[in-house]
Image 1 (tube, rainbow, N blue to C red):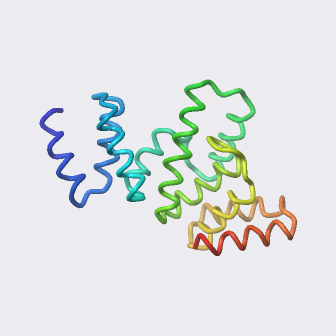
Image 2 (image 1 turned 120 degrees about the vertical axis):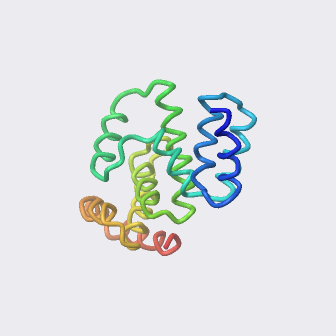
Image 3 (image 1 turned 135 degrees about the vertical axis):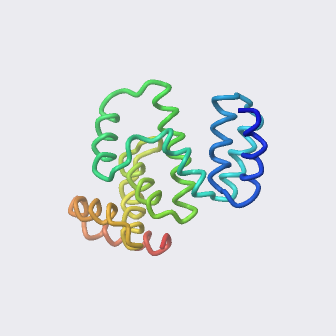
Amino acid sequence: QTCALPIYLLLASNTKKNAIGDLYLLYLEEKPDPDKARIFREKIIKEKNIQASAIISNKYCPVDTAEATFSLLSNALSKTLSNEQTNSAKECYIWTKVGASGGSISSARRYGVLLYQGYGVEKDKIEGMAWILSSSKRGYEPAKKIFEKYKNDFSSEELNKIEQRTERKS
């Protein structure tokens, strides 16, 4: 594994944006080095690296199909989360936000679901649905299905707010 490290570093500094996500996880878990992990974490967040954030969010987030995510999060939130689950939920939120902010339509949908359900963050159904709708408007089919299924849970005034917030995200 030591031989592979310089190759990872070379890839992370050049064109393979997902390599930096692998490096972050390497220094977080396999070869714990909190200082190096922090450096990579800050770099990924600063650059809004959607490839790296996707790799990392997959480690912390529940199984990610549109409806499965809604169901899984609902079940998880109906129970008291352990400290480890709470930390994973927060990390899931952070890394998904990086991807959504960086323009990933799948991350935007996932981020909206997290906000809608209050997983790793305070619940905000309006903001959550705005991210889901933004993803939907950019052509992401799973987001369209979620929006269609849950839009009737909102008043016309709330739907107007969602629409206004969506315009700022697209």
